[in-house]
Image 1 (cartoon, rainbow, N blue to C red):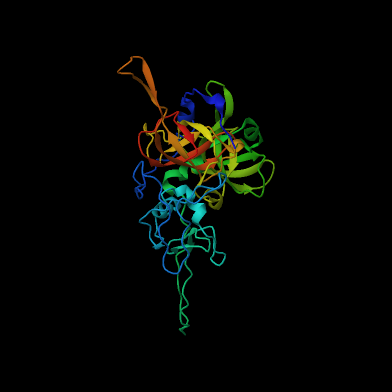
Image 2: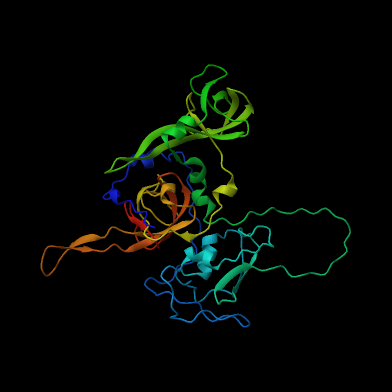
Length: 392
């Protein structure tokens, strides 16, 4: 499937996307670096010998149909078991076992007997093995049976643990909740503030305001102001309209207009006409895992979401010009290639165009209609705006 946008070359970056979109986003400290990738240029190695009592992997050099997925490339030093620790991410665990973390779905075996076959929790023990067909697999080990002990009644407290996220929470949380790009139609359909209860022109924390268009099944909203249009340079294609995050609003009384109380206001005061967007549940925001984009996917980095940083580095959030219309999903992994450069031919004169080299990997975490937010998971060399993103 080819989802290339050939009309997008050459491109320039819209400065408004950086300045308008995320001035309100909180700064996030860089997470601890994860395990390093395999040495550059080293060819993928097929799975090593299986443990005793398991089926062997397929023979090296065996034929593979063109439409089949590439062979899983295991790390030669992968563990046989691993206990999930607080602070782990799905990507960091995938990197312990795989040379290509986006092949996670190829080895993950969902076990219907555990509490959630799609989620992994701190304390879970992951077990590596081979299935009956010789394919590598990873699953949560079952707890061993323990003798039944009779104990006297007592009060016990337990700490509720969250499943590990696919990427570091601190690196993307503010962008998941405070960055938004909607179409003109979506903005026009959103609930909006009419006035407050004291005829003021601007509102602060604790203000009671009246809102048209809110539904009774939503009690908590984010407040945004409609910003500037995001357009594609060159073609001038409309990509959406950015929203400026202002704060939150809690439903007090249903009706038309409904009564809300404003909370967590940002620097800019809230005004009549500002829009309310419902919160998304965390289960929806973090419910994805690494997997490669379809073949022939081709796009560009058009902006970055970290306004306080000039360089794009590991755990930087970026905007790419591919979205839901191109089939992009949260969890899709793309390789980054630089644009290449022209150098002087030392023998014949003139110039020689050098090919673009791979500079890193990104994983998509939030998808809009025509653009997506992605986080840089690995930075092998300098990454720039307008660098190409494509199938890894």
